Image (tube, rainbow, N blue to C red; front, top):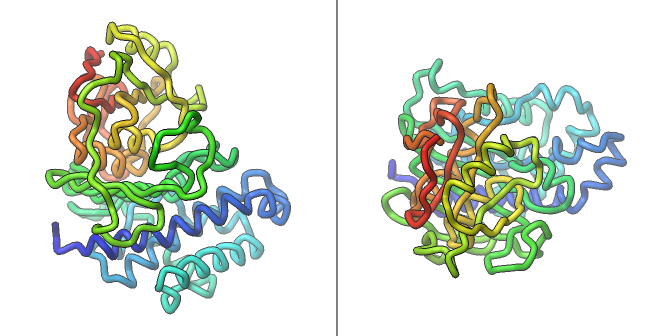
Length: 334
C-alpha cells in the first residue's frame, strides 16, 4: 500500500496515544492552570495533532506534508502562552519516549507550522490520497475521564483504505462498563482487503498485534448496539425507529467516540447507528479511520439509504446518516 511502513505509522499513533493519555490524567490540573474547564481537551487536541504530524514526518510517511486535521492555529491563539507551553511539553515528552525526541517541536513557530499542515482541503488542492486525523474524538468522554479515541485514516479517492484507532482507555477484553477507563488501553489497525488487527495501546509493530474480525452472529440473538452517551449526537427518534425495524432484541452499549467502530470491528458489538439530526454534515475525520477498521474486519459501513459511506475531502457523503454493522444484522434503508 504505497510502500507504507506500517510500523512507522503505528509508532506515530503510539506516541500520540501517550500524549492523549497523559493529558487525560492531567485534565484537572490543566483546567486549573488555564482557568477553563474545556481547556484540557483543547490542549490534548493540539498536542496530539502536533505529535502525530511530527512523528509521521520524522518517519518519512507518504502524504504527511499536509493532512485533513480537525484542529488549527485558531485554538492555539485562544489559549495563549500557557497553552503553548503545555503543548510543547506534552508532545515533546511523548515523542522522546517513542524515539522521536530529535523531531519534537520546541518553538511556537514549529507548533504553528505543524498545526497549519492540518488544514488540507483535498478537493481544492487536488489531493486524491490523504490522511484524515481526529486527534481527540469524543470530547465529552475525554472530559469525563472515560472513552475517547485518536483516529487516523488514509483515504484514496473517496475510499478509506487504512485506519488506526488509538483508544487509551478502552480495554482489549470484555468489561461490564465501557464507560470506565482501563489502565492499558488498545490500538486497532485496519487495512481494507488485507485484514484488521488489535493490540496494546503502545504497540509499535504489526507483529505485536492480533487479527480481529466482526462477530459472525449476535450472541443469543441479541444485537449489541453501540450508542452515544450524548443524546445530542444524533436523532434519537430515528435511531429508536431503526432499531425497532430490525425486528430483533437489542442490548445497548453506551460508549463515546470512534471506540464504537473498534467495538464492532473486534466482535464486541454488532451495530452502530449515527443518524444525525437534519442539517448536520458529518466530517471526514470523525469516520474515515473507523470505517477502514470495520471494513477491514469484515463489517459494513453505509449511509442510512444503503449506499457505501464515501469520503469527500473534509466531509462525508452519507445520506440520512451512518450505519455500521456486521453481515448478520439487517437495518432497513431509510
